[in-house]
Image (cartoon, rainbow, N blue to C red; front, top):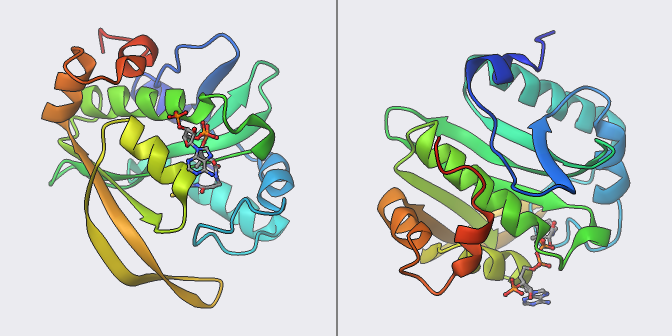
Length: 208
Ligand SMILES: CC(C)(COP(=O)(O)OP(=O)(O)OC[C@H]1O[C@@H](n2cnc3c(N)ncnc32)[C@H](O)[C@@H]1OP(=O)(O)O)[C@@H](O)C(=O)NCCC(=O)NCCS
């Protein structure tokens, strides 16, 4: 098994810029907290996440830990002050050649509506554009996932199109919007050119 601290040794970690919550590497044992919130009604409804089981989530966490060492993807735990996982935020399928990555996230519903994931996303973007040298971050969001759409747009993402029946969500083909954010747009936004001042406030480190 790969030591999850490897990712800390290789690169700095994204800073969430909050005393109450932080981003940390996933570790075996997190699957129980993941199962607890992914099993709650409505959480996976507007996503293509398969119906969760402890076994499938253990395998998923193990894949994420392995991916740190291979630098193929960087998905982090959003942790509360007691270090308990309350969500996941990170990049799937990082392409160093093309300098792009896919953003993905989910959060325990008791924390929805408090801006927690917005801060986590901004921290990941700040880290990704600086530490990973990303030029583009994209996200696929089910057309019915209004919370997630709002979150992406608040973070400066633009809708590039709609992919018809792009993913099968628990047996049903579903349409997904493709959203993307370029480094140049993020830099402009972080300088305050956009109305989204929240980004500047929550971007965490500026020296990365
Ligand atoms: C998507 C998710 C991470 C959003 O995180 P969050 O921190 O709870 O975000 P919020 O609840 O603050 O909502 C984000 C925005 O949506 C708005 N919003 C809330 N409910 C909404 C609704 N029913 N319809 C439209 N917008 C809504 C909020 O007002 C907020 O906008 P604001 O920042 O302008 O106020 C969370 O809802 C989640 O984990 N959902 C289940 C998993 C999932 O869908 N993952 C994403 C897959 S693409």
